[in-house]
Amino acid sequence: MCPLYFIFVDDSPRAATLTRYLGEMIVKDLQHMSIVEDQGFQQFVRALDPKYKLPGRKKLTETVLVNMFTECKEKVRASLKNASSVVLTSDMWTSVSTEAYLTVTCHLIENWQMREFVLETHTFHGTHTADNIRLELKRITEECGITEKVVAVVTDNGANMVAAVHKAGWRHHPCFAHTLNLIVKDSLKAVPEVVQVLEKCSAIVSYFHHSSKATEKLRDIQQQLKVAEHKLIQSVETRWNSISVSKVIPLVSLIHRAVSACEHQSNSLATQLAQQCQRRFRGVETIHCLAASTFVDVRLKHFGFRDKDNVEVMKKRLCAEMQEVYQAGQSAVPPTPCSVSTACSTSEPSASVPSTSGYNQSPTASGSTATKGGIWTDFDKQVMSNQHHRSASTDVLIEVRRYSEEKLIRRDKDPLLWWQEHGQTFPALSKLAVRYLGIVASSVPAERIFSKAGEVLRKKRSRLKGKTVNMLLFLNKNL
Image 1 (cartoon, rainbow, N blue to C red):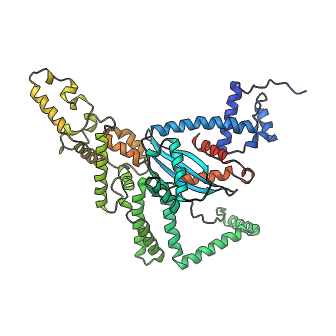
Image 2: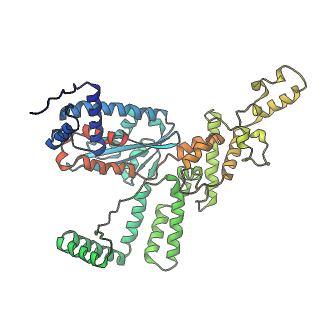
Image 3: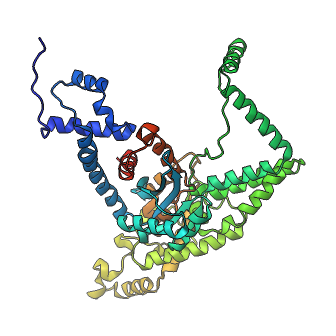
């Protein structure tokens, strides 16, 4: 005789908790919703807790996940609201059911930590023109309240995507990974000997992929030779990792140096690589966002530049931006005299360093005897006059010089942690560090959603509605 169990009512705390965990499992592992109807899964859940009743597929999709989506969306909106600047990446892709989707991700620095959100994965109807893409990008940013906060948009080099970003009034950055891919691909195509080798390698890999007998023979030989049993794989042109934008200029400089060294050895491939790099990376150091992000990365500063004149141009514009921060009163809490005494050289008077300490405040603000008369009256008036004649440009120059004199940290360290510790010492520059270090160098984050989407839109789930696809991918990334 089977034992009898009381069943949890749907709105009981225990049932609500279990249902919540069920929803999280589905979105994190991208399980299909019909799992709640699978006999094996139902039996497993009964074994864990016979009093819990699984929600139906309809309730799971239309109630549980919708509530989770609404809750998660509010948290994302709160982070976006507090952000001073954001960066977008975007790309388009086609599902197995030949439906077009536009994905938009958002990147920002919050409490000196890099944050990344998926804003939306939208079913894209109509032709993929720049105007249509612009409308969708604008709609998404307007709904999120970040249209005026976008400092850059990173996409591939597709003409329609580039034009869409420009028409939206934003600064466009080409995907660094995609540009590298084009350089390598075009260089390889220009060398016939290399093309022949690659074609032969591709044919060999294809042969083993289509012959189980050949694959088995390869495995036997590997075992006999006692080597690792690796499988042959085809090259994938767009398999790249994401990098920080501050490393773009130093990497370009290193690439130029490496290909130039090989070019002197009469290497035809190196010659093609050098020409492609020169063509696609020409003027990269004059792009202010890239140059500024390299400078405020305390691992790099000006050391990655090939042309030092470009450093001075970047610093001049950066100083102008810092003056705006000072004049708008948006700078963080300035440092105390103790925190800057070792950083300042004797060539600048210490009174010129901004401080919230009473030592550098005007006599009126500090409640001195200037308003009461006494022996210190003339001295306090002189200090007040000095404070009034100080300009934002003076503070900016001192701040930039002191930052330039700071020691570089190791390349494997996190520059955001450094800024978290030193932000108050550099009040205006830290504001710009949030803006420029938050820029990503590639559209890889958006492209990664394609892989996730492939898991969601498998053949057995290809009939999912666009609204459900967006909800699942949003929760998978942001929950």
